[in-house]
Image 1 (cartoon, helix red, strand yellow):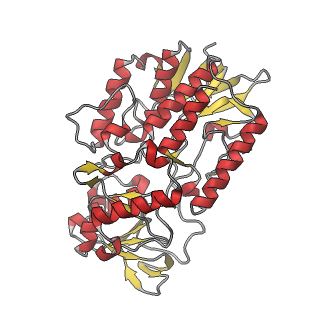
Image 2: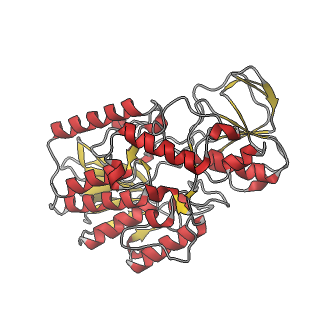
Image 3: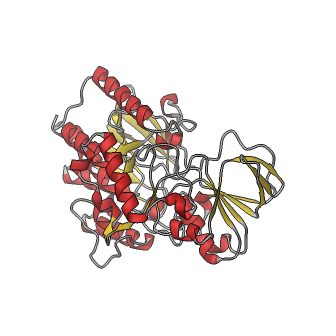
Amino acid sequence: MKQVCIIGAGSSGITAAKAMKEKGISFDCFEKGSNIGGVWRFNNDNGLSSAYRSLHINTNRVVMAYSDFPMPDDYPMFPHHSNIIEYFEKYVEYFKLRENITFNTSVVDVIQNADGTYKVSLDNRQTFDYQYVIVANGHHWNPRLPSPAFKGEFTGEILHSHYYREAEQVQNKDVLVVGIGNSAVDIACEAARLHTGKVVISTRSGAYITPNWIWSIPFDNLANPLTAKLPLWLQRSLLNATLWLARGKQEDYGVPKPNRPVLSEHPTLSQDLLNLAGRGLIKFKPNIKEFRGKTVVFEDNTEQNFDIIIYATGYKVTFPFLKQYSTFDVEESNDIRLYKKVIHPDYKNLFFLALIQPLGAIMPLAEIQAKWIAKIIKGESKLPSKETMLQSIEEDKQKLIKRYKQSPRHTLQVDFFTYKESIEKEMNR
């Protein structure tokens, strides 16, 4: 019996594979598709990728890379998804991980045995027992639509951003994008650059628009362990000042300013939105009130007609292979209670990887999570008592409630450097 089953061979699954291999831990990795890369593989045949043809990363290549495998210097600072897939493939080749990945194979069920091990069932009807299971199936593949649904019926085209692939899907159309996260803004900007129809973003609460660059420096390079330790009010003051220097007031471009303080929500990164909005190519409206055929009535009681609505309204956290455990049925709330976002106190041999939404890059955090898991499996790192874990989970929950707007979007939120330091402490426990 091999020790570990890894579910998924995306950016998290492959770094988990590397961490297991380095520690001499036997493992299998099962991937639904025919290749690695997960959501970053455009038109991935696993059917789960949300990548569109023009997609670029919005964290720079230096901070996004794994710790011991930098991205090539000849990559652009914000690489295209094809560069990222090439990087993953070189990573897997360099560390000789492909031999442990079984492709075109889905995990359909995970059940805990009486002895605490796990029986893993595959879609080819094979079953295997493992001491540990690492869940690395991602959380950007099961689209979330507005709930409750808006009043009335829209008779034009409806699309979730998950299914957006090509600019041709919005060409010669009047487009309404619902949401103001990174995907929403990317799609709206692409539609606006076509100059073939009106483009409107509908947002309930707005977002702080962060540029990719400031003074020729990637904006996310400004974050560091020192600023992460500052009081939140001071972090907010510094970020407000930096944003003002980088782009002035966003409302002067026609982009509504949120009524909440900065760092109360996940930021939206875009170098293009303010420029296009300032030219009048992207307009903004409040939340939708109701539909009347192709007419959309907004909460300010204005009306406009659209050909297509694109819901960029996020994703549900879903584990289809854990259906027998109500604990992990969190699709509606996305509120999964895990110690350090990795371990459930009642299922200590079941680990969740990259189930986070960081202010910063996710891949280095998945990497350090995987290293921590490997140390736990090897007995080099100990978990605290169940009571301590439950207390820590509740404390983290209260901090999120205090800082962020309560919504499924913010249940997985972490600060990059603070979270990284907390996992490093756990590794030394």
